[in-house]
Length: 111
Length: 117
Image 1: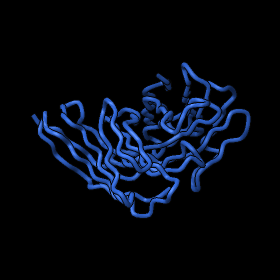
Image 2: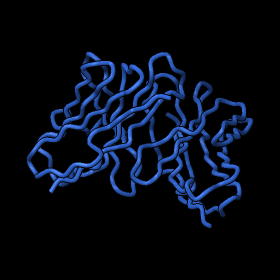
Image 3: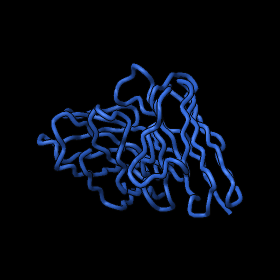
């Protein structure tokens, strides 16, 4: 799996958009970008994934740069319950499910 | 949606005893499950890949004789920490993918907090 780099922590005001960046400059052509989050003392929760096109679901949007070397997870209207550690993972389908978790970004949503 | 259940959620055991953690896929079948370990303020570290009907594959540095994995059915994998010691105290998490689902079908359990005293 390609290595990812994320800022260790970020703050966001409640109701504002949270933009979480991830660098994955060594990503290969068949690798997807996945985002998970982990609320304290719980298992990780899948958020979104993409290959090269931007993606949106009910939880978030994923913006992937054209060269695919970086991406941004956007939580459009952050709430206090979005406070969590957010992990960006790059992975192909081989060894599917075998994910390498980096240190992630601790997002703190403040009132 | 796909649900993975882990049991127990918390366990305290004495040093030298063994502890079994169960990981069940409730509404889907999973030929492969994964076991992770997470120490306080650290990220998840993959321990092993559990394959139904065959031996588990362990990551480098993980003792297979200490962390016994059994994946006897398509809905159940167990992790047994044998002769537990305080340094084994950690948060253990499993994940599984439903057969036939796409890449996003990986679901994680809620984790088991093991404390060895």
